[in-house]
Image 1: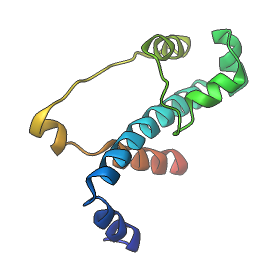
Image 2: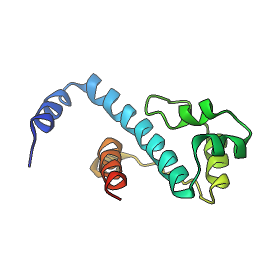
Image 3: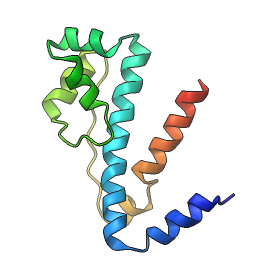
Image 4: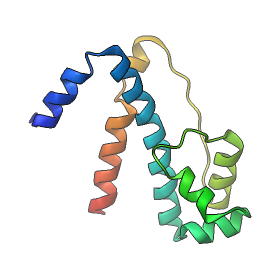
Length: 117
């Protein structure tokens, strides 16, 4: 079922600039949600994880912010290792990449699942 927002978003996505910004934001949102979900499943507060990584709670908060785009592979690996997880990076191009569910859509589904768990 298409909501008013779905229709609005479809219209906005016709603008190439908006679509590019939306996709970029979706990727940052996806990373942020994954970090927060992993931390919560591990039973850590942001402060606990910060102590474990010898960094500040503010840095963990930044990593979990959808607006933050400064995730380094080194830091992502440290976060994953601290919680017994592994980081995977996938490069896709062409039709396969375009046919996959957008990061923003995956993130919103993941958020809904987290909220209902």
